[in-house]
Length: 278
Image 1 (cartoon, one colour):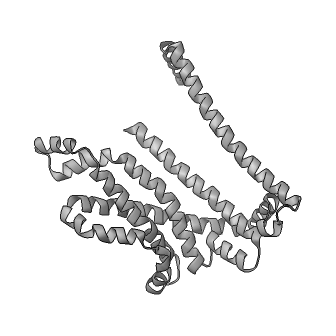
Image 2 (tube, helix red, strand yellow):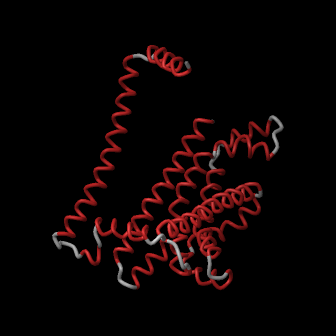
Image 3 (cartoon, one colour):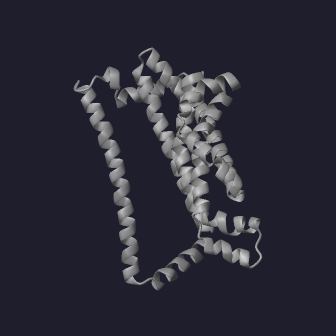
């Protein structure tokens, strides 16, 4: 019964849309299909050429590996029961660092916006910290915190936190001043300005910070795993390089690429959901 009503409603809606609008929507769907097909085609051709060049000895498969050997390595890790263990550890560390970096960065940006004095005092320090190569702090974090997941998460925060603070703070400062004055004219408090004007208007900036943090979080986790981990995809890359198992290295890199792409698509999906609910 509900399905019939839904079909009837869709049919009635479609009759209200002009032929020109229907043609426009069809062209939009067609363009999306073309883009997706081209993306998949590029991926298939890239892996196909990689396999062909390796089989033809144009490239050294010992150094570059090849897709079929990567698949064999994945199945081998799965049969050994360690594939999802390593993937799970890296993904968990990345998600924790990603969420903490975004939340803490947004909170610090709010504090700096709230206090203009504090913002001006800390501005040069934020610029210096942002330009500082955080990888160099890895050994320091290990000594301070100890070798373990905590050090890896702190490394992720060190890489993503300052970028989030600067990104969100710049978004706050770029909000139309007239909107803020309008709220203040009607007796709005600073907290109301924050909740009614700043945060809603800065939604695209925060989403953009999330997208940036996806890549930064993966970089932080992998760097941390290079230094201290005994499990995870970063550990597999280091181990594979040490024992010259380049198949293991390339397999880990490809899994990382897939996981990062899925995480980015998750942020894109979150953006669509939030936009619909606004």
